[in-house]
Image (tube, rainbow over all chains, first blue to last red):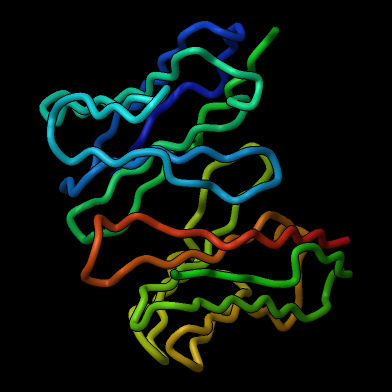
Length: 109
Length: 114
């Protein structure tokens, strides 16, 4: 079967750095997405990785290792507004998105 | 620019009542369209997707149905709601051939069945 694993919840301090991991086992791979979802709102796109390596976008970076079936989202200089759920999703061989359950990130002052 | 809207944003319905959620996309043509449901504190569950008018694929057997009467319109329906239908419903689209497969979501519809 297809499976995406990410921690249920993480806590970090304002101004610090946090890394949210995602491991996947899917039938084929056509890219990995990270989405941010604030409580009660729709997910919004953060990043897309299809090749191994690090993609940096401002305070957020996303890393992919296809051989290990592993990705992480790195958030720097954390702000209170970064409190949200972060969803990892993989595009499989049929170009269908397989979603993780999401990681709830709690930022403390 | 492309936009997606879904409505209503919030609704409270009694068990056994019908449901209709509507979603429209503007600024693009031939999109792939999706209905997802998200239970509290859970991930996204794909309910239906459509690659064209009248073409609906169901991922989960249930008392819900979907229709695509026009290219950019996607409707989620039920004849009789169950308590377990409560949740946050999300419509989404992506380019069929362009882009990376990134999904663009509507604002969401929160359904409470009492």
